[in-house]
Length: 356
Image (tube, helix red, strand yellow):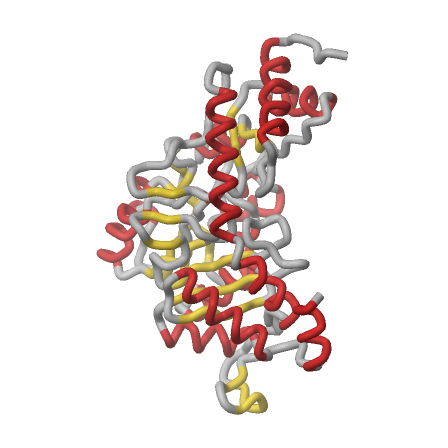
């Protein structure tokens, strides 16, 4: 209530002190020089890419095993999305396939830190740095994740976050941010989010912009929740370990274990099972509401057929998408709740009926 009252009493609902304070605090948290609050995670990727030169006649490489917003943001710049397969060991971009996807038209690569697990950034850098291609991290599910001591979002030319309410750091509505060490990228995104306006003159429009500001009320709420982010992520990791213990003997695929130097934040705890849809329905009958992220890869979606990819083109992505099942995980989840999910899944996979 105090945060709401501060914003209401000030009467500053857009581009005010709460936003500036959050931007400073989140930049410090991510260990980057700049943070620019924007309206949502999709806008964050689009504006970061536009700041780095994405537009008509260019290409941006990403994956199809992601929420459609990743590819949507690329297309919104006018650039052509180029899709590569994932590595099953990480469920993230396969860097061994990246080099062949980079052409003279490629201006950026967007690795996705899927489910809170950092993509293999060093191998991706090895390809991109040699080709002079920028990296824009889709960190929408990885607030606070670490790779070799660096925060997700701090390892490329820009990092993009969503603050949708279900995220590890979630607002009370939509929200997003771009973090970067590049002052020119930060300045361009600040301009683009506010109608292309000049830094010191809101009536001078230096580029074709948008209305993509993070409002002060959401910023105030995010400042409060940022204080708990590390503790909440630690609890998610605790839940993940209890799941690993409880599910280790079952016929399913567990999420990737953290690689050396990796500290995942388990935005989602995603297992792989045969007959995924049947298992999900059985769990629902037991009161366990599992989800699916994401059942149909972007290249097989009706609205993205123009990218020229079809069934069989991204075999690992397609295999994983047919089997993924997201089990409940949230900060504050109790051991009894984890055990209930594990027991229900064990009964489902064994074909046993739930006790009455």
